[in-house]
Amino acid sequence: MKNIVYIDKDFITLGQLLKHVDVISSGGMAKWYLSEHVLFVNQEEENRRGKKLYPGTTIEIPGEGTFFIERKEMNSDVPMS
Image 1: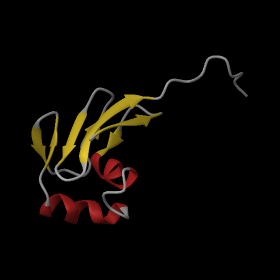
Image 2: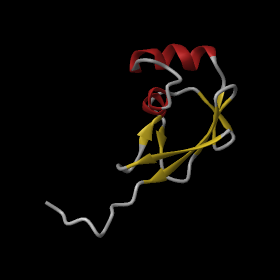
Image 3: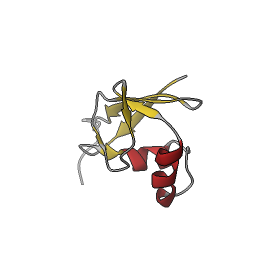
Image 4: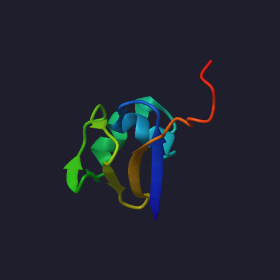
């Protein structure tokens, strides 16, 4: 299953992503999860919860899916306050 994760900042950390996509229920579980499970960032094994994920990054979580990071574009039709 392929999923797109939209971010409105420059990056999201791997720990934040795991919580955002409901793989873990709290940020504190990230270290444990990454020590017990294998996942891949751009096809390379990764286990650092602070790993910065930028738009264009692919994250594969076996049993959970494949996630793509994309930048959420601001709607230019909406006036800025």
